[in-house]
Length: 475
Image (cartoon, rainbow, N blue to C red; front, side, top):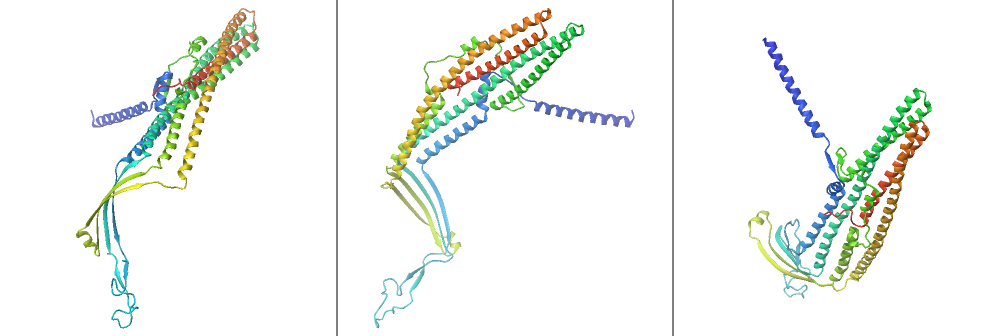
């Protein structure tokens, strides 16, 4: 073997190795970029969305902020410690003016008394040094504040309110996910029937085309079936686009990426109106506390009441104790300032603040808090009436949609039976092509109406479950 052959072989191996490495890296990159495929039932989709949805995450951040606010209120009873220092350079030292003759000298004398005359010069003494500094530590401790306990109660209520807001956000997400989920299911079932109709029309088209070649039917009959087939295919494409959009909406509500693949495991093709009716149970009595909106409003009323009570507590005295300890020094030379002895000092203070008269500020503030409390209580009564109305409306909507669903299911069965009989008559030569086309059109219209009524019922059930507080009961 020649040296040229050996070198060529080595180069080929090297090129092959580089090609394999690039192929493996590109393959791993493709694998890494493959969309995530997940299967969800309706309850699993809701459970996933209540963790991944951005609105729910935002409400959790608000709850975390409320916890920090609670700790901030509690920290006011802990000792407040501060340490400060100050270094001052007196560029021009202020002078203290003394009368002539020093302290106690008269400002005017009689002639010949032996003292300084009245117009004698005064004495100006520097009052301070060039450099002054001090270091001081201060401790403040709140001993009594009547409004503190009110603040603790308000903090606890704020915690409850923040958690209820998280639950309210989850309920809204559950509603949106459920409606998007049902929309996808109904659209997928609709497209299955469209595929079946297209297949049936295509078969009929081929049969009619063969009969036309044999002279048994006219060319116009073939053209009519081609028009029907084209319309069905166009409708199928529209429904297919609608399914894609419905999936995007569902993934958006769930907090998934647009490239993630979602497979829905729940099916509705086996459901009938009797089963759907059994899934809805009307209750004669309703507990308003099952609605998170009512529970949130009750917490807001409690906060408004505590806010009103806090005004009255501001009339009580406030007692604060403080202690200070520090060192100070002063010199004309900066070097001596740091090498000489500093002088220490300490003090203990007890401060009592008793409000006497504030120009009726607290009185008017209390009136405003009382008005806010009364408005919140009126809002509670209004919310009760609104909940009653929502429940009644959802019940009537479900009953109407269920009745419509039964009617459309009966129409669908009749239309399919009419189509079956019409096709048999046409094949046996006792029916016309127009009758078949009319039966096909009626069957498609019955299918469209049935699925529209089915979707209306599903959405009405979601609204009823939300109105009665049963849509989402998770944590």
